[in-house]
Amino acid sequence: MTKELITFILEARKRGFSDNQIREAILDKGWPVKSMESAFDSFNPKFKLKNQVQVFLSDDLLKKLDKRAKKNMLAISEQIEDILRRSCINTKKSLADEKLDDKLVGLFSRKK
Image (cartoon, rainbow, N blue to C red; front, side):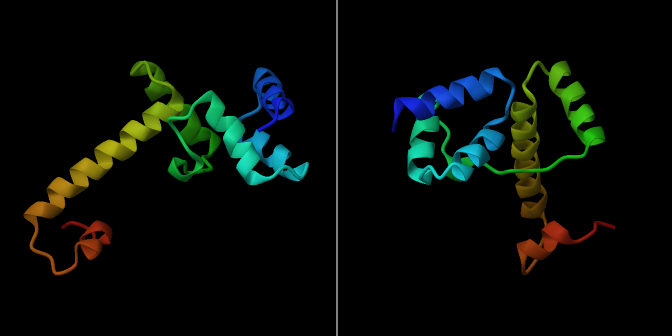
């Protein structure tokens, strides 16, 4: 991991670029993925690339999520994580009561 890469990431964040945009720029410049991820991990080692999911949201949906996040005093990413976590918990509870041969079918079946 080089100091140059860390400096680049810090400067890009100050200018308002997202981490995904920064990653794309780093890869376009030919940096190895391992070096890039090591530099990002030095800022926040709790989260790794394998724990991240990239989702493209419409402007309308993003505005709704932002409003909901502000109401709950969360960042948008935290709000999305909370929604996903609650959804998984509720799905487990609702599927536990049903008698299905295949629980995956239950996830994608409409309830009457």
